[in-house]
Image (cartoon, rainbow, N blue to C red; front, side, top):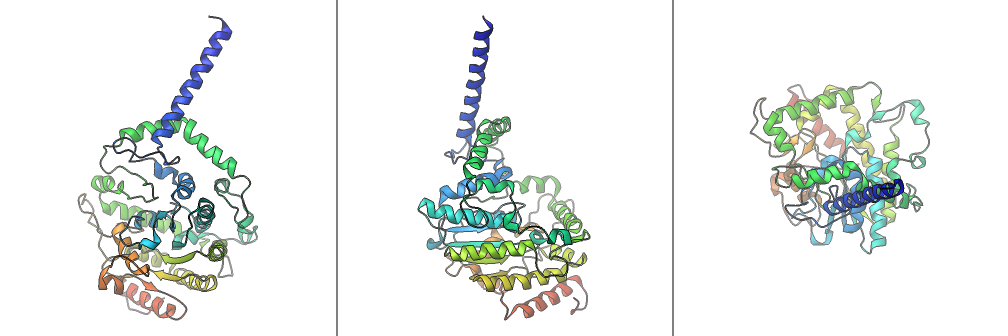
Length: 415
C-alpha cells in the first residue's frame, strides 16, 4: 500500500470513527443538550447531565417554551418540581432553570435569555418564581472590587450561549457559543465516555439524573446516606458554611455601603423582566435550623437581616408581585438529623441543612401560588413562610430572632 493510500485510509477511518462517536453522542445525549428522545432503559436516566446543566439548560429551555420559569441555585433545582400538582394549568408548562453553584447575576441572565427566546419561539414566559439565597450574595468585598466596572460590562464564559447581552441587546456571538457547546457535546472523548456510562447506568438504583423539564430529583443523595449516613451530610455542609461565611472580608455588602454588584444585578434584571411583562415571585430559600445556627455562630445574623431589608426595598422598587421568606423555626426546619452511624433513616423535609426536599417545596408552592391547585394544610400556611414587605418586615425579623434564641437556649432579645 502506497503512503498516500495509507494516509487516505487512516484519515477516512478516523473520520468514520469520529462520525460514529458523534452519532452515538447525539442519540444517547448524555447531557440533554440535543433534546434527543428519551427512551426508558436506554437514555432516560442521565447521570452526567447535572454536571453540564449550565450548558444544556440554556438550550433546553428554548425548546420547552415554558409559561413559568423556576430560577435560582441548586436549592430550588432539587426542591421545586415543575411537574408538581400545585401549578395551576395557566402556569404550565413549567421549566426549572435553576443553576447549581450560580450566583444571582448568572441566574438572572439565564432568565433574561429564556424570556427573549420564548418570544422568538412563539411561546411566552409570563411568570418567574425566583429563589434567592443569602450565600449567593456573599463575596470578597474590597475597595478595589467596588471600583470595578459595572457588572453589565463584564464578559463571562456563559455569555456567548445566551441570546442577549446583559443590557438586553442581541448577542452577536451566540452562534459561536452554540457551535462550541454542540461541538464539544458531539466530538469530545469525554462525551463518548459519558454516553457509554449513561447507557450502563439505566438500571442503577438511585442514579443521578436531570429531567427534561430541568428538575433534579436528587436521587444520588440516597446512596450517600445509605453508605455514610445523613448526619455526615449535615456535618459536611455545616463545616463548609463555617469556612465560607467565616472568612474575614467575605461579606454581603461593599465596604461602607448597603449595596453590592449582586444587588445591582438583581435589580436591573428584575426591571427588565417587568418591562417584558413577566410577573416575578421572589422567595428566600428555607434553611434547616442547624444552618441558621451557624450563621449566628459566625456573626452573620445581622447581615442576614440587612440582606432581607435590602431585598424588600428591591422588590418594592421593581414591582415584584410577592416576596416570601421561608426562613422559619417550625416542625419542618427543626426536624432533627439522624444520629451518627444511622445509615437507614432519611429526613422527610431536608437532604442536608441547605437543601430542602421536593416534599417541602410542594408546601411552599401551595402558599406561594395565588391559584395553587394543591393545599399544604392550615399548619403549613401558618408555619412555613411569611410574605414580607416594608410594613411587616421588622416584626417578622424580631420574631425570627426570638425563635432563634429559644432554639439556641438563650434569653430572647439578643441581636
